[in-house]
Image (tube, rainbow, N blue to C red):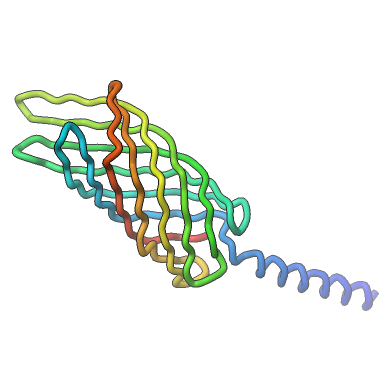
Length: 177
């Protein structure tokens, strides 16, 4: 009976050690932070500030899938502009187990743009968007990282018109589970 109990304890300890080694790659990551967005269209450009949030599920050390959401805001001469995006797609991470984790992603989804000029009227439109880019996370602890930078080229397509001279830069915190 003693030998059987020792064998069970040994197997449990070895399994726990193996799981701890696997635990370096988080199963899920939640990012939230600030974003700067440059939206160009019709020969003009808007520099907007806002937020960026994402949820990533990791299949293994290198491959995951992300859901990314963002909002950018700017008021010019009393006209309030807003752009929201909701995109989804694959993420390739290069080094989850290290202190620095570079990653790339390709995200596809939708966007909502709105402009409000107060008493002069408002308008909005829904369209397609995609974001191609990546970034670098710096691990602070097993469950916490800083997203040093995330840079994306963003394409918007509203009402038959596509605009590809857009960029988004984000930074913030990452919770890892």
